[in-house]
Amino acid sequence: MHKRTKIRIAIFILMVGMACFFTAVVTDYWAVLSPRVEVANTTCEAAHFGLWRICKKYVYISQDIFQEGKACGPISLPGVENCTYFRHFTPGEDAEIFEYKTQKEYNISAAAISIFSLAFMILGTLAVLCSCTGQKGRDYLLKPAGMFYAFAGLCAFISLEVMRQSVKRMIESEDTIWMEYHYGWSFACACTGFILLFLTGIALLVLSMPQMPRNPWETCMDAEPEQVE
Image 1 (cartoon, rainbow, N blue to C red):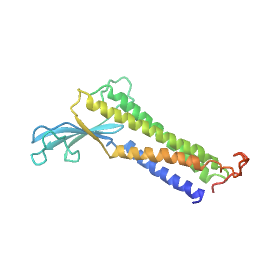
Image 2 (image 1 turned 90 degrees about the vertical axis):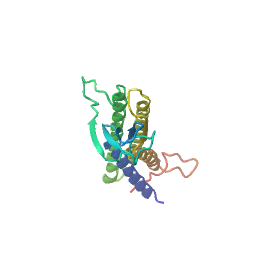
Image 3 (image 1 turned 90 degrees about the horizontal axis):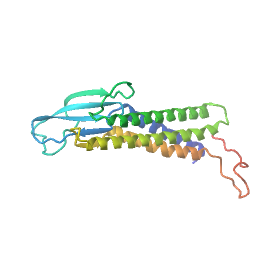
Image 4 (image 1 turned 60 degrees about the vertical axis):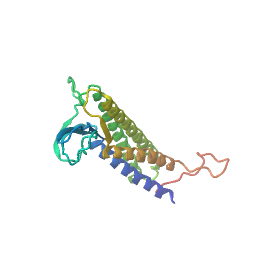
């Protein structure tokens, strides 16, 4: 396969990865939290949240769907939902996230790191655009583009891990009613974005490197530059 075709495939995969992670950032189904339900014909409070807000949903558990000791939900059941945005960057306020003070620190970290990831994606995209639309000989811009995308994937991974620790600590806390959890489709989108951005960013960096010397005595600097049209 021609080198130009490989680079185009890599750029397409990177676009898919960016779309996945951006979808995860703007949605709030990273994790679904549920209390245990002990009796039927009662209302329980489940919740789902993302980087920016939490949505609490009051679900009625009828006798038909009741299973003793099982979690409240599923979250798709009809019920009254109330969503509240996290006040991450509001100074002078002692806002408690999920009724648990230290939770705010986790969400601030995850949200800030995700913004860094988006910034690296923008820089990588600008480098790719300059390489494709600029004059010939600007193929060297693919190298920093690959690095920017790999850094974006690394930031996405850190954000995922911070959120995972956030959910774990939330469930272990005695100050909350939620006892069980599972990760939602937003978390899956973020994982997909991390994998595609990190691995394909490295692949783009490798593809944009100068061609290897054909002879043992030839150095990389002496090799003829390979243009990517």
